[in-house]
Image (cartoon, rainbow over all chains, first blue to last red; front, side, top):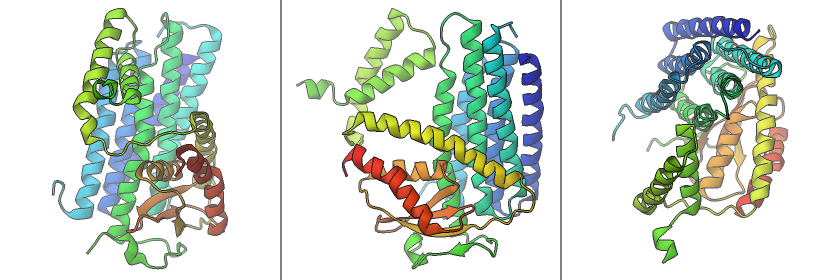
Length: 89
Length: 120
Length: 163
């Protein structure tokens, strides 16, 4: 039961990643691309957690936490760049 | 994966599946919705909740398969729920600042729009 | 004296819990190390924190948190319906939300709540800090939306923070 659920979840999140990549390439604006990147890191974080369940290990936890933090900082920096044309003023 | 007690197996499966479905809906919204400000809604709400569901499923799985609670995944969920509004706010700000195209149906009730820009 | 060596008890407690969650186990050595960190970090950082606020009604805060959780899930179903139902014409709107509460922390909490819940996103705060600019995905009557946010969230926050 859980095996099937995790496999279906893998498939759904991979499909979600494909849709995000479409938005990343299609644009039409820079802001859309940043939003797509933001969604991509959240979805890959979910994939990492699923991988941790699949292999029955907590080793991926730190990686997921790091992706969450660095992704957030990256989104903030990119949005700031759009706002001001500069990240550190 | 290890075998779990039946209730934990059902609970974890349901949480993971619901989370995955919401994550997919968020990404579908990112593709389908008509303009940038509308697209912003889908990832901030649905994708965040989707990952939250997967994290809850992971907590149930690791707590039931090992002795004792395993709560550290909760840190990721809390972090995501704290940061999602902030990145949404910054991106919305950027969208307004760049004056991206909005759908013509969008009604604008601002009295003095210049009050909301930090352009001097 | 006690204030000097123990400037922010709630921050210390938060740091200790955070540390134990990160380690994912409770042993006496970890608790001692976490307690030392929870004492030292606020000593080092508390002068930079100028946004201290007091929660006057902790029980109300817990109630607010639960209401928020339920509302997040409900609004997710709402958004999912908007995304999935074919060819439903959405009616986006940009409108102002006049604030009654004051203070940086309460306004931040309210803005984050608005972003997470009913199909709305806080886009900007007015220059004088007395109104928020909100983008709603699908709203027919924005006055009703303002009233809903006011009664459901802002009044509760006003009670919790007494501001």
